[in-house]
Image 1 (cartoon, rainbow, N blue to C red):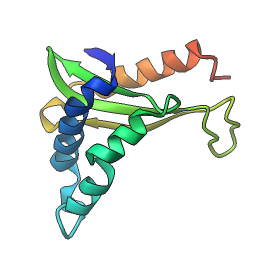
Image 2 (cartoon, rainbow, N blue to C red; image 1 turned 90 degrees about the vertical axis):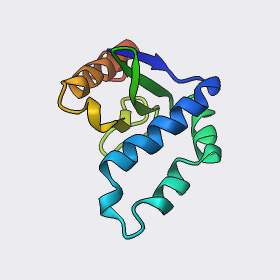
Image 3 (cartoon, rainbow, N blue to C red; image 1 turned 60 degrees about the vertical axis):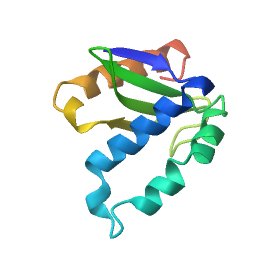
Image 4 (cartoon, rainbow, N blue to C red; image 1 turned 45 degrees about the vertical axis):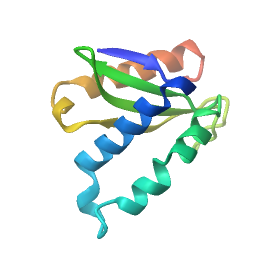
Length: 123
């Protein structure tokens, strides 16, 4: 598994994987099959806005050299019972359907824990 920081020039990959992974897993929750949710949360404008925030990095997830998911973190963001200094929030972790059940989520969680330790956001 390869985890790469998502840069502004990767916006089309982020758009693709965000929409695809959401459609793979969540459209059954909505009367409109997630159309409104996708257009609100995964539009070009919205993702560019989120990607421009240095405290909310995105990462693209690759398995066997194929883009299979993404994750979004919130750094220095206050979370219930933790100050912004002590917190790191994993806001989103999405995979396409064919990447599920392979243990990739565990690898990503280990990456997030290691990153939190590196930036001294854990106790």
